[in-house]
Image (tube, rainbow, N blue to C red):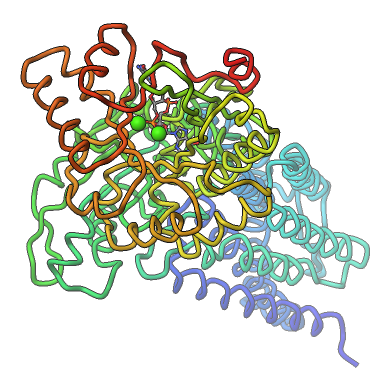
Length: 636
Ligand code: C2E
Ligand code: CA
Ligand code: CA
């Protein structure tokens, strides 16, 4: 059988190997830059030193009795063991704090105060050769523990307890994976300590710690799933996680977002199939400005920086520096290319108060006309508002915030012709919202499909009540969104809804804006043809605002042309405007189209339009868009 010395030797060799492998792994993967990386490395080095000194202690155990040199080596190994091991629990505490994030908020003195116990125990150990408070060797060269060791255990226990308290206090904030790993690691360490405390000769503490830390490393230090492998910076998911924890842990943190706007151009110029090439180039540069671990690539061309430990002034400098870099060309492949970038800076949590805010800052579409390169404070209200609207639109259908309003349309003789369905939103947080604001957001997020379906169903159920017919309406107009029309299977989907609702198709008049037809005319004309063949009516909305191929539009055989309100309003403002209106109407009439003019607000406008011979009118003069109930009351 082996004796306890040989067993201890085995345990320590195992611990040594585990630590050595872990250290190699950490260095190869470059997990060496962040505070938590460094603290973890420190713990591994301490354990390595512990294991090494343990090995020496075992190897010199027998011979120390006969050789003074060996005895000295034995004493040294004990000394090194205690000096290094005493630092382990405090470092572990700071490691836990850095993983959880809280310690970063503290000032330097707060940190020093937390070190008192550690400093005291370390001093006792360092001075042990003089005073022998912690351990001593008796005249038989036997190792004896002294009262000081109890103090050292006590100090370690305090740090472990503080770490555990940390975890418990932050329990809700911690991701499940982190919780489990931290707790498992602690259990491992505690079992090791207890075993060694109970069975003095069973020297497993260092081995158990090494195993526990291996688990922590695999899960907490390994960041493969947080990395964008091709660019070597953090990914979108990591951004979400880190913003989440920063919101809980920082009273304020500076964030910077860099958006490369013309990245598509770059790929065309370089003919590169490597779509990451721009991101690689820009991120390589950013790594020279801020630490690698502050950089997140949330989407191609969209980079976020979390500037830990940087105040406003330092952030200003960083932003300036980055903006200046974008004034110069970048070497991408064989080309020197000027990249167009917008840099946004925002403070967390004042401006970025949630993960979705941050992702919005990182990814959302920017206003088309930007006259600035650096956006901050008020400039970002637009984005924050859009983020809020996006959230409102997403919850809107479930919460029933949408309501269809109707604006009646009239024949030129003043009798009722029909009504246009216009959507309104009433959000519990943002209040009343108008379609000009939420429709573009809904189109961007793809929710427009469901929203337009909702409007169509509402209109169908209104028609089914028989009220419109009773009120002598000819049709109800429903707006179609450009993006939606272009989707595969769109016409079948519409026909399916209306047939399921059991409504006469000729009672529905779809409106589509002029600009669509210009951009993707072929597809559009097929959609119109199919819907018209199915029996629906069709109107061209906002005529006169786009630059469409007029001949092509007429070949679509649309039922009504709606002349945009700006044309009517301009006719009152200038002679040129008047000529445009007159000629637009004349052209329509020659083409034998029915004409509706919208935006009618005054009696004078009606007189002009009467003279021109338009067919239908719509506008605030008659009625604003109103809820269904009000429409029915008004017309009855
Ligand atoms: P649109 O189709 O051109 O609708 C006419 C807009 O002009 C409506 O604004 C209406 O309230 C407004 N309007 C009508 N008469 C007058 C007037 O005499 N004076 C003034 N100043 N304005 C007048 P609204 O309801 O805010 O809708 C804005 C746009 O949102 C619509 O323009 C349409 O493109 C879109 N939209 C509205 N509802 C829907 C919907 O259900 N689906 C889709 N896809 N788009 C919708
Ligand atoms: Ca319309
Ligand atoms: Ca219109």
